[in-house]
Length: 316
Image (cartoon, rainbow, N blue to C red; front, top):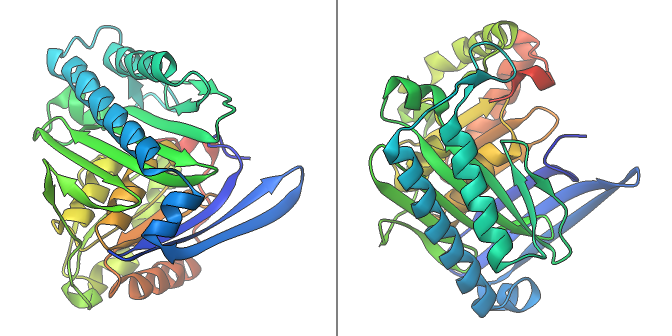
């Protein structure tokens, strides 16, 4: 079972009047599937009240801003490795996660929390926070301008709130299930691109060399089918780029739930479709006119190249 818990597959799409999603989970060896397709008013009643959504959203934004201040100080301190020697973590990662976790527990002690820097707290409220305190650590160390705080909030396994603070560009993206996504308070939406041949596609690579080779082989099958490829080094930032139209689409394998939990909600609330498959650790996100084409192209490329699901050592 993956570190993000019970969730095996998550699909979401969103427009101004409806909210729908499916999640499939494994509990006590039994596969379960839950689906939602309803108007936003009904979602508020059946999932979280407007008051609680307001509180969760406001708290997530506040904690993201505080964690961003840790980034800005640039006190990297001790740099250690995780899955591979090229996969670093710093004192900034650890301090930012501690700050966020402390803030959540002070305000909502019954909530669960999952963080990249080994935080794992079981909650009783049905609400779980999913945190990447510094997505794009390598970029941060090199002062390459693509790194972010990522905070997702889910209720009974379904994302409800997403906040990503791009600390390099000082842009804060936020979303909740009943409202459109925003960047610095201004509404955003995914692109209207409807053709793979005209799509600007974002992607990323794992740290494990053997997995990276497999990813490159898969990407080689897709390159002739799209306008061009971009690789920023931050999954959270890339998903926000899809939500704001800077990218037409994004896909990556080898990503964990904390890499995408916030971004999925932001894409969805910007009118896009985002899927995450836990067994492949694969995220695919785009506007609604492009998603089926991209999904089919990725699956075909995986078949041609014989791509395998990334091992646990391929953490990002």
